Length: 366
Image 1 (cartoon, rainbow, N blue to C red):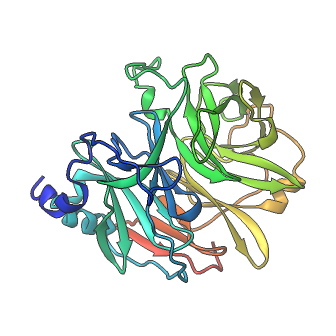
Image 2: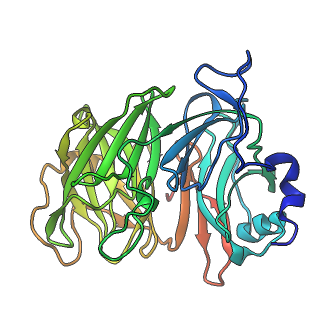
């Protein structure tokens, strides 16, 4: 890669060499000042007070980065053509040499943070501000971290020879003072959901999961959740999860405790040969909707009321779709998505001509 370190030298030089850490009065409780030893950036999400969580599946660790980005701002629409080219140009390389792994809107500042993996495996964090790409410093920053208990070994493989560690973290979220992590563990029932208090302590509540996959016609315990959100349905809090091929499953949050094995309720089968990408809740016309982006199917829209009204569970094989009704939006190849405000989403979409464009929904049709 051409002039990669010339551009980022001041911001991230030495990011992958462990640096000594110092404690001082400007470091939040439970944090240290230093350089987080990131090996990957699988998933990112925001917590309180501008804290950005970075899920590093290669090291089975989640880092909490104090961005100090805490100035309230009104949400402005993002519209950037060929975003991958802009990021690549800033890195001194080509768009073919980078992969955008996730993106997250800071709910306070409304700035967009983007996780990028380069061709040599280097994870980079960038910030989109005013249409320009800026490096997010990862040297001499305030951070904390937690390494996941019972993660798959670094050399563990599944029956097809695929490494399991890469799915130790499949998605992350934050709710009610806790970091939420889906992925695989080294347990017999390896599909796992972790709830970790923040600021981090030694406590990790790790529950194993089971769900009926109607497209496959069987119960499964080794498939990781691909994307999730949390929500209140009929006065009770749930984990709302989607898996490959695309079952939609509910798990009561109060049952996901340390050492438990929880069987979810499959409420929809939304089509096989597909992997869900991102899931968010939006409001349109005073009504709440679940919006699900997919890699091989259009974006799906599901009414929260429809979810609440559906009291059944899928327990038999289906060939196409079944369960809760959903609509298909005229949007395909949305590769990343996050919530900008209560009614709008920021979407990264691969267009027919191959362009990777970032745009914002209008709050009326999404």
